[in-house]
Image (tube, rainbow, N blue to C red):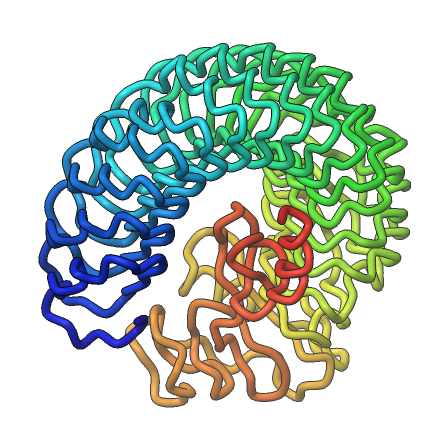
Length: 503
């Protein structure tokens, strides 16, 4: 019984069905508690009561259901702690308690040696991980993200040789990553992000030959990446942003042909981008924003033909943009703001699929190439650049627009390649009568397009439409139509395809 939503409470009469082996009542009850009569279902092997607004504690009488192999109580309002009496469920293989209000520890679950999957994510667990966690030799999936778990990772975690998914994201875990984690040879996904993990990445991570995703974003890591990571031939995602990692860019990762995403933004990466950067042939996203990288952008970047997103903002890059960047035909967004780049923008650097081009706070000079108007993108450039259209130079109007509307020395502009008037008279920020309606925000009308959150394109498009949203779930520049929720920087189709690799 699922998705009915018509029961005011769970019927206690179900407890009289002594031969029942499978019971699923999900999203069908408006509240109440689990009837004590359910404790009489001695033959029950599968119990699913997800998303029923059930309240109270996890009832201790469930301990009498000794035939259970699957218990799922996710998406309710269950509180208190996990009862120790559940230790009698010695046949239990999967337990799902995500999305409740449970506190305390997962300690009682470590007394169930047949557990293959534990999901107690998004609760209020506030104890440390017990050393007894190492007793769960069959465990392959552990999901505890979104709690308040404290303390350090127990060394006994090295005993979980069958573990495939370890997700501890968004807790209060501190201390360093134990070297014994290298014993988890079947691990595909390691997510320790948004914790207080400190120290350096242990070299033993290089033993995780099955690892696809390494995520330790927003922690307190320092030091450099161990060269042993180059042994991870299955690695696709390395996410280490918002730490204090130092040293130069880890060019030694180039021999991992499966590597798709490198996110090391907001660290202390220094030195220059290596000339071998082009060896990362399958890279789709490179985010090195907000570091201390200097030097120029190497010509070999043109070899990254699978690149979708390139974020190098907030560094000390200098020199001009390589003309060979025109070969990056898969590129959808680029952010080079807050560097020391100079020179003219080379023709055809950006292709028609681009959805975001952020180049401001550099030292570019000359004209904005007319091609910038040939595709629907949000473009942020210095107002020192000019916009030539059919021999009409509109730089003064662009600067006036920037001064009156943005008041920050920069302007957002899409220049149509063929347009008799480059920019209509600047809009009144409080609203104008020539606007196109949906702009909002800073109001008014520009060429009938409206001035809104994003930028439109084409004839009469003005500065309208909200085609782009800055900074999505992965920290990148995203559009709702191009980037999926599971991997914020990918299209929905691509996100689904890549997501299957982790299952």
